[in-house]
Image (cartoon, rainbow, N blue to C red; front, side, top):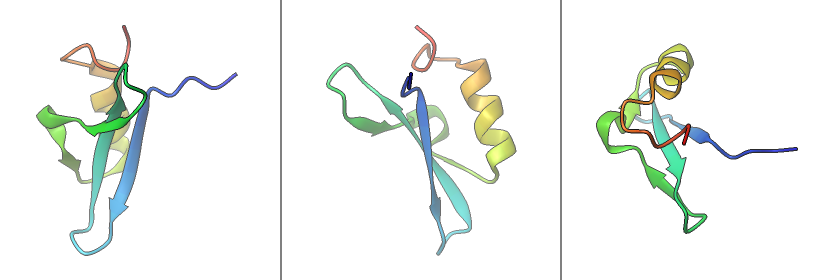
Length: 57
């Protein structure tokens, strides 16, 4: 089973990761509180904390 919770894409020109969440429209949207993050470790931390309730409903 796959549950699309979050997605990160690497921005090579900026050396950053862009964070996305999947809304009810089944489209990926940029996660505005932390649109870019420096590492995958921080990506996991942001998803875990989920301050806006976007990832874990």
